[in-house]
Image 1 (cartoon, rainbow, N blue to C red):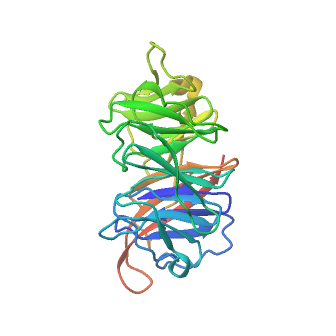
Image 2: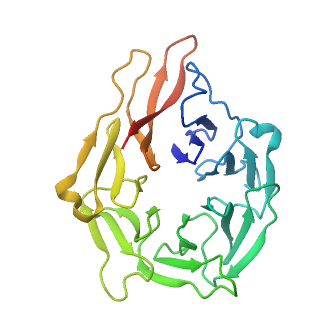
Length: 293
């Protein structure tokens, strides 16, 4: 399960590959039911949002990228790009998406029908399925050997420069000052824009490992039980705070938070609801919650 937040919507993907969306203000809340979106996403994919536009990998023999309007995805979905693409990066200011096909980085507008355009050949194998992020006119990505993080400048007025090797690590979250990931040692940060330059990555919080987490300019947030934990990036160990999750509910069997995202004012997290036994038929469900920062 994963979660994405845009200026308008919050969307989640389940373990089966369905994608469901809702308005961030809660104005389209519904009783317990299947998600409003029914497009099939490829299992294990990472989807993305730009306003009310949903970008995902369509589950098929080709696993092609698709884009659609939230609320009418079945009717508006359009395929584009190559095959077996599992992740994209989104520039929500310029309304552009980026993805890799082999060593080549492509882009397309999220407005209208996407027309793929070559940005540059980085010369670095990525596999097309490893994580990448957009941050301040740069695409951050990981080589296919999962060994190093690279920063590729985009939105340049001339030919894009060669990618910059930031150092060993992975890509899970980023803010204007660093790129973050988690392994058995804990949360790590590599500084932007130029990486390690011979130094060591910063260990933000030791002995905390989670596949899904997020950051803003000052804090890191990660799943904790059925709620969320957070801390100050500058002094994480001394500032850890646990934010409780939902209260017990006889219709739900909350088992744990699966993912967390933030915007300027709120924290959004998705909790595995286990097996529902009400209102009529037993089914697997998840729930999205929102709390103020």
